[in-house]
Image 1 (tube, one colour):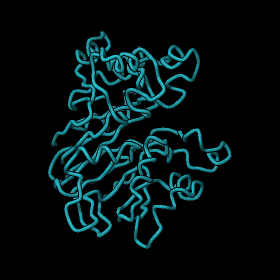
Image 2 (spheres, helix red, strand yellow):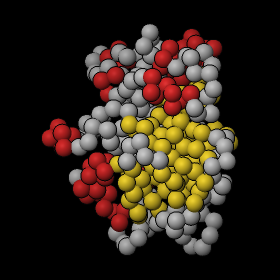
Image 3 (cartoon, one colour):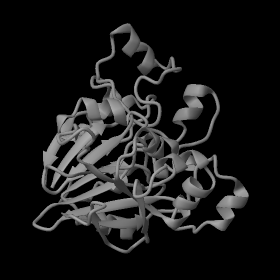
Length: 309
C-alpha cells in the first residue's frame, strides 16, 4: 500500500487566512521555524495507479496539481482517483467533493447518516449526480469491513474497516436532525489494510481513547492520529473565548489525559500527528512542544510525505 499525505493541517490550513496568532503572524513575517500546510488530505493506493482519497479537502485541486500520481493520464477526461471514503461531515472533510463535480465517475463511501446530511439536506451535493453514473454512493456500516473498489468493480487490493468513535455531527446540522441520526455514524476512524501486508490507521478527529481503540491502533503499522490542539483550552487562550478541544471532538495532545500519554504504550506502529490547527505550538520546530512530541517517538506530518506499507 502506498500512502501520500497531500495536506496535513486542520480546517483553514496554516497559516489561516484571517488569523494573527503568534504562529500565523510569524509565518507571514518570514520568521517561523516550521512549515506551512494545506488542509488535511490523504490518498492511498494498492497498486500505485488507482487512488482513493480519505475525505475530500477544500484544497484538493491544488493538492492534485502538485502530486503527479493524481494527474489525468488517459484520453480527454480522466482521473486516477477512483473513490473517496468519508469519516465525518465536517466541512474541511467534505467541501472538496464539490471541487470533484466535473462529470467524473467515482465512488463515495459514507454512512447512511452522513448521506442524509449531504444528499438530502444540502442540495449543493446534487451537483455530483448531474448525469447518470456520475458518482456512486456506497453505504458504510460501522464495524463492517469493505473493499475499496472502483465504480467498475476493479479490486484495489485494499480493505477498509470503519471504527465508530462517538456521536459527533457538525455544527451546521440542526439539533432536531442530529436527534434523528444514528449516534455511531457521525464520526469514524479507518483501518486500511493491503491484502499482502501493511495496515494504516487513520483518525483525524478523536474525542476519546479507550481500550478497544488502543487494541485497533496496536494492530497497525502506521497511525495517523488527531493532532489538532496541543491543549484543551487552546482556543480559549488564543481567542479569549471559545470551546474546548474536547467540546468539538478532539482529544488534545498534551496533559495527563492527552494523546501523548494515552498512546504512549503503543509499541508496534509508527505514530504521526495530522490535522494540526494553526494555533498548535508543536508546529514550531524550535519549540519545546515539538521536541516533546519527537522525544516521545511521534512525528508531525508535513504536506508531501509519501511512504509504503
